[in-house]
Amino acid sequence: MSESKVVEAKPQKNIQDFDSKKKPKRNSYAFACAMLASMTSILLGYDIGVMSGAAIYIKRDLKVSDTQIEVMMGIINIYSLIGSCLAGRTSDWIGRRYTIVFAGAIFFVGALLMGFSPNYAFLMFGRFIAGIGIGYALMIAPVYTAEVSPASTRGFLTSFPEVFINSGILLGYVSNFAFSKLSLQLGWRMMLGVGAIPSVILAVGVLAMPESPRWLVMRGRLGDAIKVLNKTSDSKEEAQLRLAEIKQAAGIPEDCNDDVVQVKTKNTGEGVWKELFVYPTPAVRHIVIAALGIHFFQQASGIDAVVLYSPKIFEKAGISGDTHLLLATIAVGFVKTVFILVATFNLDRFGRRPMLLTSVGGMVISLLTLAVSLTIIDHSKTKLIWAIALSIATVLSYVATFSIGAGPITWVYSSEIFPLRLRAQGAAMGVVVNRVTSGVISMTFLSLEKAITIGGAFFLFGGIATIAWIFFYIMLPETQGKTLEEMGESFGKIWAKPKNAKGVEDGNDRVSQVQLGTNVST
Image 1: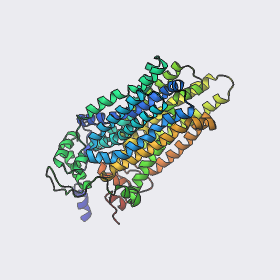
Image 2: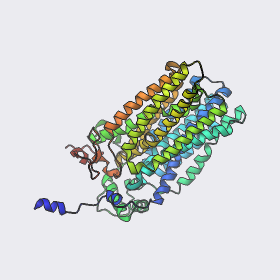
Image 3: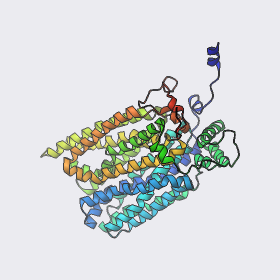
Image 4: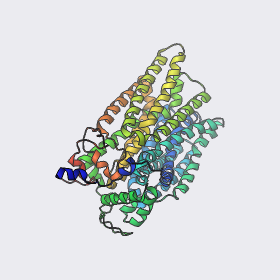
């Protein structure tokens, strides 16, 4: 009898109920907020794209060496660490929205300094300032977007930063081609300086956005938070459920419905680093490993080497002439942008895990094929048209497969798995790993190519991508459709267990029921 009663009992509603029964109309307000916030990522993309071509003319004008060029290309990733490390505390202090404005203002100054650089040293100073702004933008855009998005479209909306990174890369490539006809002294300065224009537009546009509801709850502003949640949720009932879950994570009693409340535990970052790295719960430890690992492998598989040095790669493949090289790089930017849009519209349909594993598998094949074709070209005394065509095709297939999974899912996944109290600092650490790895790859590619040949370099990247696929298969569980406060149920288990027919992981671990961010003994 007791068993039949249990069967007949109605399950308590959660946010997944709103996703599974019917697909709600896409929330246009949340869409607009996510788009505005994510457009800050265009700053990084533009810098990556424009430097690939500008470096050709900077080297000729300033008479600098290959070593100075590769340092100049990659150092902005190291500089961005300052912004990423400061962004977590800044966003908890002044809010997510004003942190985005701050990022745009810093990059504006950096772009102007680069555009007016009289020499190499001044150019490096401009890149230092711009790098700080990029670090802020990279950390805060996905965090804000994840916190404002309803669960039904969070994957779609949180992939926007990667969409705009790719759009920025394409704009940078087009800028290279457009200004390449100017004089040597003016061309590259125009390429870099015009990057100040979008930062102004973005900073003004972001002021029209609401503050993140989770940040408002952290500050005890429940009345303001529910107003934002009502606008960014698929229904009023879902908004109330999201508010209840955020209140629970923030330590606010569920029956407290005042517009303004006193939050006993100030969520300003104190003790967060200890909870992340010194005495994490099993679930938090798994989250940290997954977040840092996905950021590391995204960059270690060589994407920045391909994007930044695509003119060099195409030159090695047999293409000659600045115009042809720059047009070939535009093709790379176009393919990246098209396939990131494909990924964006399918993340919430197929899930993070299947798309990521498919993406990395395609990257492995593309990298190894590119390595073989470049090695054949390097050892051939005659011009092999088929090998040149294969090299170009595999560069395009590599950026395409990267863009359908590893590119956007890295930012989506790492921004949604951290619990509220640890989210800003956890996301910042992911960006730190991402930028350090990117900086190392960018600043060593030319030296690596000279040491082990360009084909050898891509064999190395192919091997790293293979290890990445194994890591993702083992360590990254599916997060599709889960609310940000329910992520702990998927973590704390080393092997990423499959879901059962109802979409719930088999073999729930008691550890996963412990509230993330607390060190509770079980």
